[in-house]
Length: 282
Image 1 (cartoon, one colour):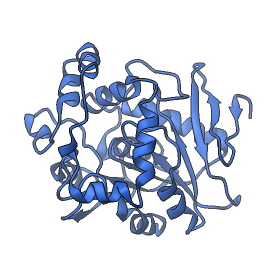
Image 2 (cartoon, one colour):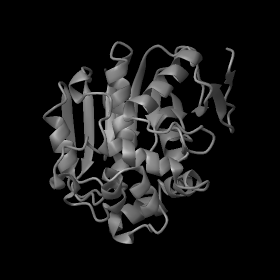
Image 3 (cartoon, helix red, strand yellow):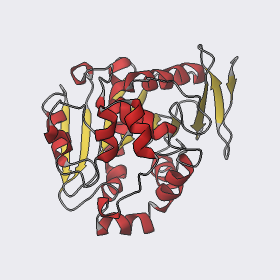
Image 4 (cartoon, helix red, strand yellow):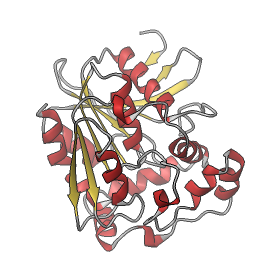
């Protein structure tokens, strides 16, 4: 298709969007009739289909398609983008790839984008899964309660300039992760840390635009997500507290919550395999 540079087994592809922006994407490929998982990456990451995701999908014969959101390496920025804007880019990619039916899923900052994708394409979405997904900002300081380091999101509420200024001195707070999180990063999800570093390698633009999108109207309402939705949440998450999953549970028409009391923000990702079983059961 014009404007589409295919992804290879070890390299990303590129899609020229109608407005002239480039969208970097990844596609594991597979049989023509393979079920499709559309994966939405966290903040910051590259969008690459990292090993634990690829392996969990391959065991089930599932093809994975993912894209780098605007402002991340390989994808041109879209100033003022909303969550729905980034999800619309993914739907344009699926159109270009000829993908009609899919499961959409995302972790952390990918959660909102997975939900928006389901809201924008309800007839094409079989199910949606979020793992440690952030909720829409509900206008109260309670939204930040339980976050070890909410500085970036708080700055985003003050606007783009304030969030950019915060990025100049921001450093990761190691207390954001639990011991179980660090064990997971040293084990089965080691590739996550490496990919996060690569996602931030060209600067904070993608992360800044993500945070601005999270605290502003998403452009897609939770009530519009009419397909089955699974919220997987760690009870000890210090990045996205469990209150976010509880809030969304009450507002998604067909939602189910898996609360994993001992998991944090990263260790909850070890639930990906059973979550895929749930999703593709639909």
